[in-house]
Image (cartoon, rainbow over all chains, first blue to last red; front, side, top):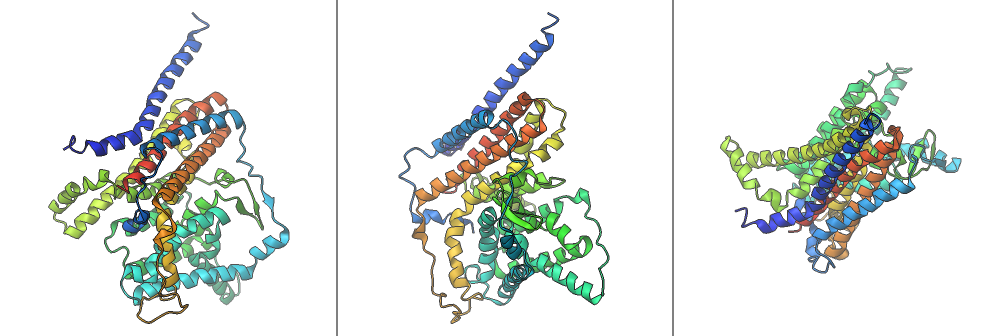
Length: 46
Length: 460
């Protein structure tokens, strides 16, 4: 059933692709910023 | 209603688009990213908080705010409310031939949105319940030969919750109830709402209730805050567009109200999409298995869909707020949700404009013959226009699509601008302000893509 209607799902997924891309980007940015914050906090001692 | 909301299809398919429809979502996301960068670079300080109000010449304000104008506008509102009730109760019980359904669902509910956007809060002047409440209070005060006892103070914790209840009730009537478009149902709903409103006005005062609790007053006021036209005290003038939303008094129920506004349109759009129509039979069968009649089962199915859409919108916004909260700062998630709530208003506007544009343009034309024959009786032709018909050729399907995309993109850029301006106010650290806006940008892209998906799916 899922495969039979893959055309519909593919169109839906293609519309939501920018949102998925943004969440991936946000995850990347968040991890990078946390690393930077941690490095800044630890910086003077190390 | 759903059928007519997409009457643009009747004018032909959108086969002449230069790129696949899906790419419009990507293009819209790019526009938002460029806007985000532009705001970060070119908008370093808050600009919408002050508003830059410039009053019109005093004579203009004096005329527009005069008692005769208020009386005429209020009387017009009361007349139209009366006409809805009268035609709904005594006219033919055919939705397309009776004045009441088309007036309530098209002229009032949809037509007042662009009017509010352009002219400001005109519904406040036209509000029939406010007009009747003020008139009754004036007569009662005259009869009592003195001021009336002060009403109860409006409970702060109620916030916008009464408006939420009113808009949900309207959405249930419009999108869930199987008899929601029957003229008699519309008339009875108007009477029930009027009675509830008069009781609330008697308890909390006419102005307090219209400002916070009266659902339609609150609804149109939110859109009017985008308008460059505004009233300040006894003056009418121009302000920066969107600046009215900076001063929005958010409180309990404000975010849920906006979630209902966006979610109900989302559901109306999704109700035609394969995503929803594919699961309706299964949900319907489940409801029927609970012992509901076929009609009740379908209503319950649509109720589930409506609630699901509202929860989805609310949840997505709160996800963005949780992300903004995670970047730091001392504000709680609840506080941030209220502070950024105004950014949802242009999104709600974009959803309404994009989804219902064709409905308003096509079905709005029906008023020319319904006004001439409000009861739908044979042989009645008051203005000589009863024989008019709807011209579906005024808008082509491709033009509709471009307008819809434009509404969606402009609405979300406006939302991004509001959120950016607010972030500059509430964060001391500019870095935190920018980081918080990464999340709001994601929320905007999400709502943009959802809107375009629904618009495209409704035409499948």
